[in-house]
Length: 127
Image (cartoon, rainbow, N blue to C red):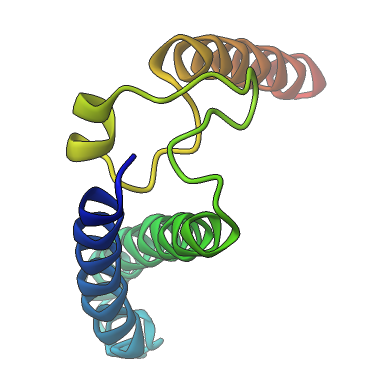
């Protein structure tokens, strides 16, 4: 990658970091509120669970964005963390925080899905 591409990537990543940081500061949605109505409590619990999942997803994305900025600083941005091959410029344009090439990411996702299925099977068996 040339210096201009790195600068554009850094600007994109820093903008995403600022956006996520501001979103993660607002945590009012996860506050526990009691209600006399059981249906309201169930609805609030469901809304709170959704808000927690969103915060978790956004926190994970923020960690990935910060890691990508560190890779730029260290000089290994755009190189797959698994196979050390260059990550496609198209992939980096779409997902600037990508740490793996598409082939390694797909293999990782397949492995993770298999692990989740095994875990779910264990939970069903345990119940």
